[in-house]
Length: 233
Ligand SMILES: O=C1O[C@H](COP(=O)(O)O)[C@@H](O)[C@H](O)[C@H]1O
Image 1 (cartoon, rainbow, N blue to C red):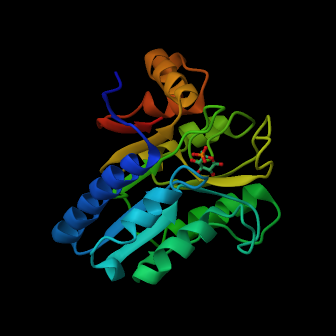
Image 2 (image 1 turned 30 degrees about the horizontal axis):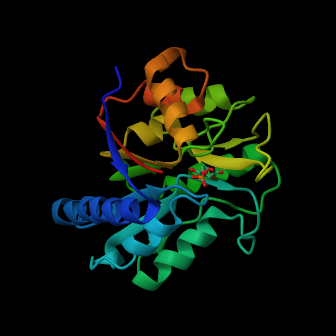
């Protein structure tokens, strides 16, 4: 049974202020408890205003490592690179921004390389912050030949390569993504979405649970921790 708590806001600015405050608190608590923080943040467009607010928080950023929940297999110079946007927002704070992509063409090998890189970090994540696509993907857990591996990778397998099928029309490229086990081992899981269509999609996915046809539903169905879902119009 998924324990989801919804937080609704009038607009994206109001949501950005609230979510940046919550994430700042999560980071601060991790720093107090363990002296360092490891967080995964989503790519795409929805989180950009939240990055801006969060980067202004007064935190000991030098002890914070930020990874993308997933990335598109494009060069770092490409605007579609998730880690590029994360680096632009957070490198000025002094945080460590940790890319999970490589210039390996074979997406499966790129996934293995991402996993090897992530093995250098101290899991579990303090925060897995997720976005949701209009097709129901989360991180880069998409329908297609790699869905089963992304959902059922064993504990300790942090990342895999993914070839979405069907390809998303906005960014039709192979990806690397955190696995469901890496996401759900996080101390906190938080979702941000905007718009009525994604709200309805997420409500349906949660109601369907294990039988959901959507990757986000299949991920959340195994969550043992309560999930905060932040939504704005
Ligand atoms: O491709 C991706 O899409 C999702 C959703 O992005 P949004 O802009 O529609 O919120 C994102 O969470 C993921 O990290 C990204 O790679």
